[in-house]
Image 1 (spheres, rainbow over the protein chains, first blue to last red):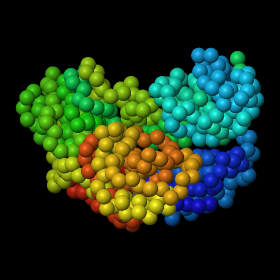
Image 2 (cartoon, rainbow over the protein chains, first blue to last red; image 1 turned 90 degrees about the vertical axis):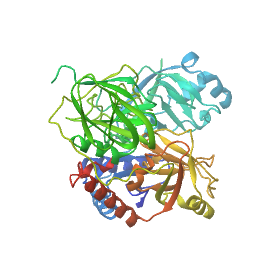
Image 3 (cartoon, one colour; image 1 turned 30 degrees about the horizontal axis):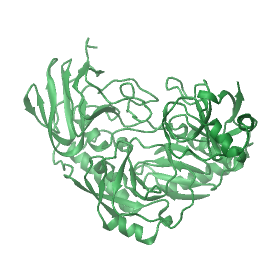
Image 4 (cartoon, chains in turn purple, yellow; image 1 turned 45 degrees about the horizontal axis):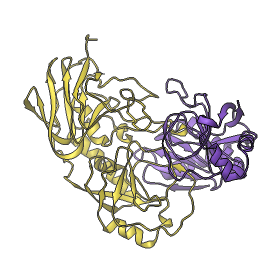
Length: 213
Length: 323
C-alpha cells in the first residue's frame, strides 16, 4: 500500500489504481475500520475506487503516525466477500420523458431501446464512489455494448431521480443539478434525504439492481 | 429565551451565508465540509463576542448586509475591512460592541479583503444543525437558512443575549489588498506535469477569475502543460488543492468544493494560508511560493500563535483550525 500526501492535511492511501470489485471491497473495509477507530486528529475518511483519503489536522497527527496506524489496522482485517454490501432494488421508468436520451443510446449501440433497457437492468451494479452531490453514487459496470459516452453538451438541469449512463458508469441523480450523463430513465426512490441519518440511501460497497416498471 | 432573538436581513449584501467550522465526517457519502472561506477571521469574530469555536457566524462577501437586530445583543465583525455603522454611528472592526433591539447594523464601504464575519454573542446564529453543522453548502443546498444565501426579509434565529463580553483584538495583520502570497506544496500528481509547469506556477502571478465562487477560484495565467494525459479515477480532494482540468486553467478548491475530484493536482496551498486565500476576490493576484511539509507545519503553528497573541492567549479553541 502506498501512502502519499496531497497537501499538509490529506493523506492518500493507494491500494490500487483500477476499477475492480475485489480491490474496492478491501478499500471499503479498510475505510470503515479507519472511521470506526476514531483516530486522533482524523476529521474524515473518504474511500474511492482504489484509494482512501484521510483528512487530518496537522497540529494533532502526521503522515508517519497515520501510516503506522493504517498498517496496524490493515493487518488485523479478515478477508471480506466482494458481495458483502446491501442489495438495493431500484424501480425505473425507462424512456419517454423520464429517459430522454434512451433513443440516442440505442442509436449509439445500434440496437433497440428495449435492448438497452434489458442490458442496463440485467446486471447487478456495485456502488463504487459517492460524490459530485450528496448521495450521488458512481455505479459499475455498465455492459460495454451500451456504454455510451457523456453528452457533448451537459444539461443545465437534470431532474432528481434521473438514471444515467456515462461510459462504463451508471448513476442516479439524487437532486436536480446540471449534468452531462445520458439519461435513460427515472426512479421515484429517494436517494438522499438530509432529515435522515445516514442521509444517503446507498453506501460504498452496496449493490444496485434496476427493475424496469 | 427572550421572545425575539433574531436578526432581520434588510439588505442581504452580495453573498451572505451562515457558516460554522464545517460539516466533517460525511464525505464518504458525498457530503462536503463547507465552512468559512477564512476560518481565522471566523474564529476571531467568535472570540471577540465570547463564543466557543463551534458557533456559527455570517460570512459577508464583497458587499456586506444591512440588518436589524431584534434583541439586545453583542456583535463583532472580523476579516475584510468594512466601514461599519449602528444606526449611522461608526463602530470598529475587530472589537465587540453592544446593540439594542431595533437598531440597524450596516456594512458600508469595503477597504480590503473579500470576506468579513459577523458574530453574535451568547452562542451565535442558531439555524438548524444538519449532519452536525450549521454551515451553508450552496451547491447542495444544505445547512444555514434553507441551504441558500440570505435574502432581504429573512429572520435568522440567534442565541439570546448572554453575559456581555467586550473584547478587542490587538496587533492585527489585515489581509493585503489585491495581492497575496500563497505557499504551496507539490501536488499529488506533480509528476504528471511538464517540468516547465512548476516553474511557471511559482514564477508567474495568476489572477482570480470573475468565474470564481465558494467552490473554487479559477486562476488565469499561462498554461500549465501536462506530460501525461491518462484519465484519473476520482478520489478524495482537499480544500487548497490546485487542480488542472483539460482546459489548462487551474482551479483552486475552496470551502464548498466537491468531496472527490478527478483532475491532476499540481499543488496544494498549505493550511496556514487557507485563510489568506479566503480573503481573495475576483481580479486579485496570487503569487505561488514553493513550500515543504516541515515549513507548512511551522507556518500553521505561527498562524495559531498569531491568533493566540491577538486573543490574549485564549485562542477560541485550538481544535478549530480545521474549518
